[in-house]
Length: 283
Image 1 (tube, rainbow, N blue to C red):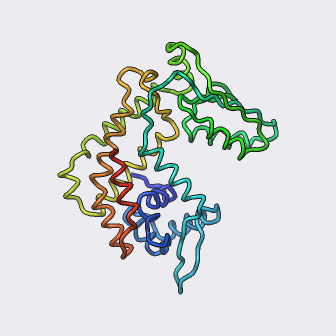
Image 2: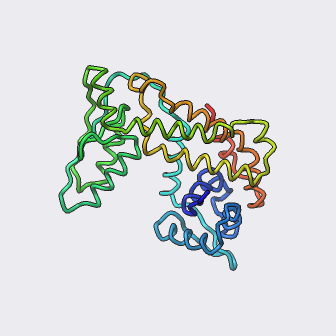
Image 3: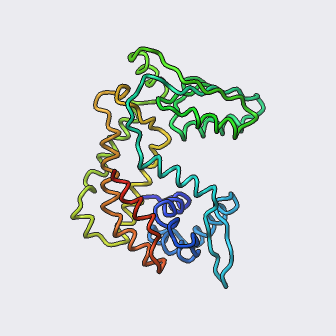
């Protein structure tokens, strides 16, 4: 598998390093963990330097070593991402959509792209160039996006069609559900054999860390694509929940060995929050 160093660093922080006591991790420790994935030290240094310049980390020197700490911005992104992954919406649908409509001056292309990224992150689908829909009540999220982009005019509506067939047609227009369903089926086919408690319990810490990072990296890609459709809007045989249960089970099964290996590299245990969130992942 071809690993992307930047994504690896963020995944390791998301599952483990953010729970280090004091929130500080030495470059040598990060380098040792990425060596498990055959990432060269020079590549680690370059990617950490870029992430620091982009505002993801702060650094300080301890003797000859550089120590990295998460910025509040990155910690917020990790919190939000973990919430999206492990806490799926299961509310009954009342037939209403959150509609976000924006107007952006032609010259402000960067603002337009930022709006698209933010709406996609929250699970909105694009109905037209400037109109996005979500089957969940995300009015407050749209208003936050509006506040963060003062150069755009963003309106949030809470509306419905009054017809389930029309609603399903809207869902099919906003998201490529055929392709998404195929990719979920591919994910299930790839990882079904990994769902084996006995097999995973016998793995070494390094092997568990690799497999756990691989499955979370592949599953995380669905966050920008899956609107978590209510049951009324799901196509027949929709595989999203099956994929989630598979991911959740494997993630938990590999958790103890992977976490123990990370703590052996760090030389200290992770804060209790890591274990709490690990357990919550299965509920």
